[in-house]
Image 1 (cartoon, rainbow, N blue to C red):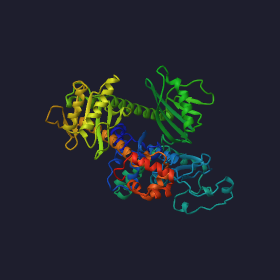
Image 2 (image 1 turned 30 degrees about the horizontal axis):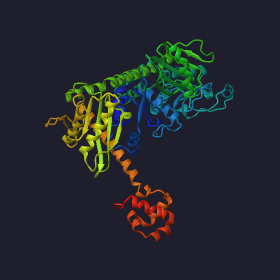
Image 3 (image 1 turned 30 degrees about the vertical axis):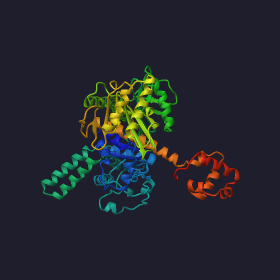
Image 4 (image 1 turned 45 degrees about the vertical axis):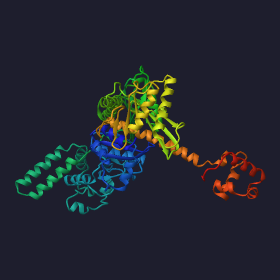
Length: 604
C-alpha cells in the first residue's frame, strides 16, 4: 500500500477516539507504536509533515506500508498500552519507552507500622500496591499530601514489640518537626497508626471526597482570614488531587494472565479482536477476520479461533474472557462471559474494536463496489458513450530511429489494470520509424485475433496520439468491419486533448476530472509497458553479433576475435594467415565462409 492509499483509505477509517496506532512496513513488521488522544488527527499529522521534521520521522513515514490501531477508554489507558506494546515488540523507531523501566506504584508495606512509599518494582509479597502512575510529579504530590495529612513514618526501623519495649530506638528529627508521632518509642499506639493508614488507603483507592471537603474548607478559612498564599496552596493541592488516577482498566493487577476474545460474524467472515493480558498488562491487541461457512455459528468457530490465535501469539493463558458462551470445551480452560466489573469493561473495549473494524470493512466494501462504477459512469457521460466502459484497451508504440519497433496494449477492467490481458507486439510489416503504420498493424492484429477466436470486443479503445494515430487505427477497424461496434478515441500528450474520429475539434476535460485521470493512467501504463519491452529487446540485441550466425565458432573463439580486432569490419579485412594463427585453420575457414554468406554493412 503506497502513501496515497494510506491517505485515501486509512484516514477515513481511523476514529477520533483515544488509542494506540501501529505502523507496519511492507514486510508486515511493526516499526512504530504511538498513542494519541485523537487517533485520526495524530496519524494524519505524520503525512502532512514539513521539511523541517526530523530525519528519523521522514524516514519512518517513507517506510510505512500499513496502519492498525486499537481503541481505549482514555489517553491515560493509551499511554499504558503503548508502553506495553513497545516493550513487547521493540519497534525500531521507538526510543522513548524502549527501556525496561515500568511505571511507578505507591505501596503500603506489610509491616507492623506500615510505610507508604513509591516503587517501580511490583511484588505483591511486599505489600499493597496502588497505581501505576503516568505523572510522577502528581504521584509525589499525593505522597507529600498523605504525609502532611497523616503522621506516617519514613524510617526503615524494625518496629517489633520487643524492640519498642527495650527502647532500642530513639526519636529522630521527623518527630521534632511534627512529621511523625514517634511509634519507635511507643509514643503512638499501633491501632492509632493503622487508623491513619486506613485513611491513606481510602485516598489511594480514589475515595477522596473527605480530603476534598477538608481542603475546600481550609481554603475557604484561609481566604476569609486574608491568608491568600495559604489559600492558593490548598487550591494547588485540590488541583493535584483532580489529576490523581488510582485505577486503570489497561493495567489492573487483579487481572492475572488472561486472554480476551470478541467475535462478531458476518455472512462469510468472522471479525475477531484478541487481547492478551500478562501479569495484569495488556501487551497484545489485534483485530482480524477469518473465513467461515454460512451456516457456522460463532460458538462453533470459537474453539478453532482460540487455538489458532493462542498458538500464533504463544499464549498459554487458561482464563479466557469472551462475548460468547463456550461450554464443555476444555476442562483445563475457563471461559467466562462477564456481565459487570473490570472484566466486563475489558470485554466492552474489545467489542468496541470489533465494531470499528466492522464499520471499516463495510466502508471499504461499499467503496470497492461503487467507486469504479461512479468513475466509469462519469466517463460514459463525459465521452458520450452508449455503454459503460467496463473493458478498455489502450495502444502505444515505441522505437528509436526505427530500430526494434515494438508496441503495447494494456487492458483495464472495472477501472483497474487487468495485467493478464496485457499484450506486446513486435512490428512485422513496417520498416523504419513509421508510428502511423505501426499503429495500424497492431490494431489490425489485435482485433482480427479477437474476431477469429470469438472473444468479446472492448467497450472503448484508446490510442496514444493525436489525429494521425487515431485515423490509422480507425482505418484498421473499418477494414475489419467493426468500426461502428467499438468506440475509439485518441489522447494527445501535450495538451491532454481527446480526439474523436471524423471530428476536428478536440474535447478538453477538466484537469481534475476522474475520467481524464483514468485515461491518463491507461495511456501512461501503455507507454510504460511498451518502453519496458523495447528496452528489453534492445538489451538482448546489443549482446548479439553476426558472429553468432556463423556455425563452427564457439564463445571463446568469438571472444578472441573481438578482443583483438574490436569490430567485425576489421575481422573481415584481416589476413587469412593472421586469423589462422589466432583461431586455427578450420575455424578460420568457417569464419570466412560465414562472412561471405552474411555481408557486414557496418560496425556493431
